[in-house]
Length: 233
Image (cartoon, rainbow, N blue to C red):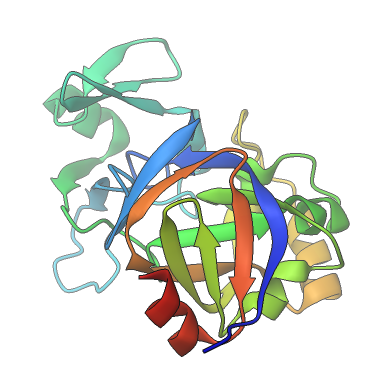
């Protein structure tokens, strides 16, 4: 049984977001399991009065300054450094009071759509952005072509020890307008995404084979998913 596979790029950067909508952590490598990167988006803050809301999370759409809160893993917990320089355990009531929401831990992650997001450096540059962090990807890929990741939908990607199923393009919202360092909004980026790529940029993927991925790993596109899974297992 033969399978068409093509090297389409390499991993340029990896990002983990210990707390939903807060700043990310750059990684050299990441262990990918069924629910995405280890410790990615396992914590979030729930807005008050949202008992019946299907999406109760405090996010950058309402609070762009959240990006200035910098979480990190430390001795089995998450510590958040605030814009004022104070550090709190993620479950500290003082942090909840400052944010106006209560912390919640989800072992399967608080994802908007799928557990892994990918984008290419070419797509980031094509819409006039200088920093992929605006798009909050887990995996940044160096690849050739114009918006190359759009062609990956429906195929499998083998990256390091892991295999991902690319499910759909990532439909963008006002979050991409938020500067990842200052929290200030710049609507030009979202306008460019709308004009140049119909409001989508990057892709969402599910995990079909867990494993470690690292910066520098090849990204291999396998066009026939069924055959890819049979052979790569």
